[in-house]
Image (cartoon, rainbow, N blue to C red; front, side):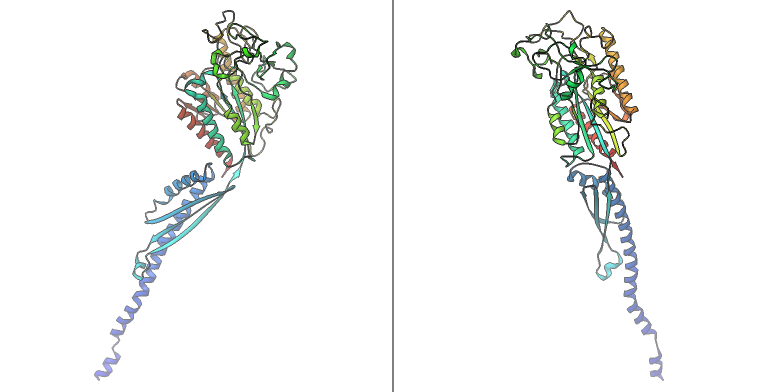
Length: 460
């Protein structure tokens, strides 16, 4: 009887079965909980990788800079998971393909009972960058005031950094073309210059000491892209005078190096280095930037500089390298940089062999002397300054009307507010005007514009 009761009692076996079932039950529950946590981390990892890849895809820079940028975006989008996951991140750029990959270690909870301390999850993201073409003109102040504290050297460094960012690793860029337009009292169209003055060359004084290439602007056509056959330029030729003292028959009397400053002499006094037309070859742009020098005398003619900036971007003559307006998948931009007011200058004290010329109102410039050619329509220097600023505003508006994105930079702390306002209004928007009181600020401004221009060429 007792034996039958003993063999029929199932209470111990139920406990045994429960004990045996508890382990896999815990494993199942632990697996479900920890797997859910892992999937949450995996989802967050995917989102963070997408954000990082998009950020890198819309930027330019070295591999290290892009890795750092991607890491910043990855961290910002991943480390707020609240799930205690340690992650790694890597980004690579191969042509126009940006690949981001990452993994995370998720600490387990219940699964630790069976010796599983962590789960590894991995994800990847890929962004294809669709490149748009860019034609860029850099209109850069090369006037004598840029010698102060070697500001011209700071300009070379800043402009070079911009070019390095835009070209990236390309020696020949398939979708980038850059022109350099140095300006001071005049602009030098370079090898193109002889074809621009042929219709009026008979009116230019002889120049036995050679012609560097600067031209006198056409009255009535300063800010217009008028065909050359309609109106010709005149040859820039500063004839000897007490304020530019040299002998036309003696080459040694010419002091053409910019280091002479206001004591320089010769027919090309105040004429800067030539324009470099649009090119996709980086070394050509590099050479043009490193050739920039500060050329004294004549004044600052920002309107003339900007007019030539428009001409190098235009598909119409005199320069014809520019693509047609509104070419699909291409944009045009200009960077206009100055360190001071637009104005005519006149020598005020004896410098080197040069003396004050009481018979004239101004130095010679891209408009000639104020009292010689009358291209500005006045002999009053204050009125002339206002006219130059109005012409600058007109060419800025013409550029914007043609779809050119206009960036402006005012450099040094000595620029007054009225001049800043002129260049702020010239820019396509207030955010595209960069005031740069110091050399460090100048470099930061060029860098910021380079990054923005890179984004203009990327379709995410």
